[in-house]
Image 1: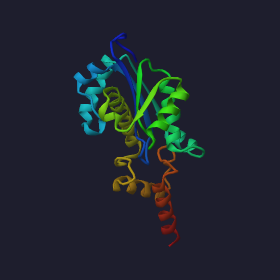
Image 2 (image 1 turned 90 degrees about the vertical axis):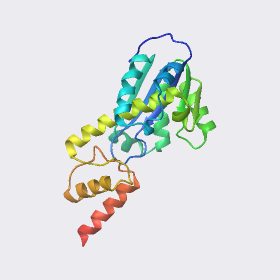
Image 3 (image 1 turned 30 degrees about the vertical axis):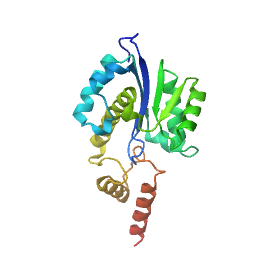
Image 4 (image 1 turned 120 degrees about the vertical axis):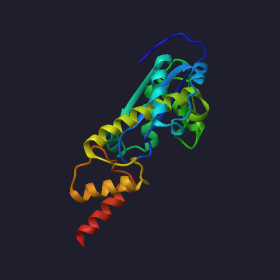
Length: 216
């Protein structure tokens, strides 16, 4: 998705949505756009915006950006990759692919505790100059825009899951609605393998609880 190429001061941002949840995919997005134009839209970290506001900004971002790309990493991919990789390595793998599509300065909302280490590896593996910065989704308009794109797309993916399975809560491990859904599904023998991240401690804990309750 591209529009209005050739703007001045083009900056590119990369950010994800859905890194921490126990249910649903992770989405990583790239937005390249004029930083001043994005500031005029008043983009900011998607977590601080209502869903309706994110949807509005998403449409506006698509209309002004030089480039918008995203990758949906399915639960099945996450489960398979986590047999050999950490979540940081998975995010790096897909962020590097997006960085390869960027034209301009690239800033990534840092997924590693060590910004320098992440920046060096992202730059080396993508062949681009990349800066990985904590809280970049708050401080860099292009990253804020990428945060919004990722969140909107993930929300839509979660809607599809809810259409099939009913109420699943937010998908985060601390959400009692989500935990109740997982426990109920496991107790009833419902196949939720396509939406649940099997490597999460939450899943192991609930599985053990269900197994124990069945024994007694």
